[in-house]
Amino acid sequence: LAAPPPPPVILIPGIAGSQLEVRLNETYEAPAWYCRHGSAAPQWQLCWFELSSYARTACLAKEMHVGVVAEKSGGRNLTYENTPGVEVRPVDFGGVEGIRCLDPSICELSHYFAPVIDALEREAGYVVNETLFGAPYDFRMAGDGLEQEGYHAGLTDLIEAVVSRNGGVPVTLVVHSMGGMVATNFLAGKERSWTLANVGGLVFISSPFGGAPVALQSSISGAAIALPFYHDAFLQVQDNSPSGPWLFPSAGLWAGDTLVETNSRNYSATPEDYEALLRDLNRADQLLALGEVRNLKGIHLDAPSGPAFPPLNVAKVSCFFGAGRQTPKTMKYDVDGFQPGGDPPPPKYDYTDGDGVVDAKSLAYCAQAFPDAAVTSKVFQDQEHMAILGSEAMLSQLVNALLNSRPAH
Image (tube, rainbow, N blue to C red):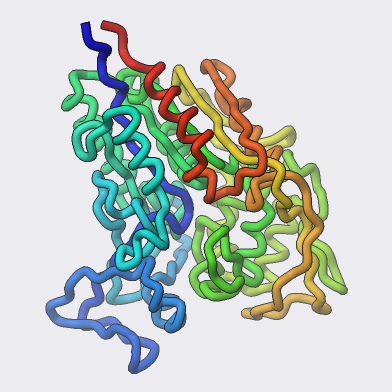
């Protein structure tokens, strides 16, 4: 008998890894003449990512701005709003074209999940839209904002449809970077019986289970997040996105370490200092989000001994991540203090081990989130946070993990 096919796979990208498009209606007020303008008959247009956005960051900043409203509505404490007249959605939800590369006009030069897609097709017989799918998302949001936007409902429907199409075989979610937080937040809200029937495995690649200090830099002065841009190119997008505070380092895992230094005061890994930092910078939207996103669905990111997770009910977990790269640990700003609304110069760093973006202890915490699962951890020396997606060694491990997860005859 021929071997059964491997389990169907859904790819979930990391922060900035989903192409996004906007629709601007006639009420939208462009910030400059050279920006896109609203229309009475608006069409969906790519906004993230186009290389041209690098030259018109003010346009992109307004199109992608997130407003945070503190109100109790429909069981929520916060509501998230786009700029008036703007709608935002991911490109090709369910397919892989919105995550294959960052800029579709220069896909070969901006590939993202492309090496993973190619390897699964070539080495394991996967077929896009039959056994291989994608779940891009609005990466500005933390888990609660994604649920508000309907992402969780859409992902539920996608998973159930894929399982049905593949004869009842549960899916394996293959996730990169912040996609790991998206996946765990999604599963934390699911009944055990649903997860056991529909999600057979999780493969985490470079996922920051305990956050990352570089997320603080994103809110302070902007960070390239392993992309080839100047540090503050997209500060006006990063400094209001709720996903920023969601990614702040775990207070328990960093045990009060100093993470940000200025000439007049330091900021440590504590909820109180995170609040003080955002207040000093006047990052008002992120300050509102901070108190909400650090504790969602029983996932306590700042628990005393490290992030605490509820049962996630997945039987098989793989944790793949890089090591041996200089990774920011402490950011040192040569300023007397942070000014409200400021754009400080880039920091100097003290470094630690990791994948160049995420600290080793945050990456390795993956195994501790799943005490009841069969967990396999694999460290890839000298592999960087993004480049690992093209690593032949990692891709070989991924293919083997999926082939070894084939359902029994």
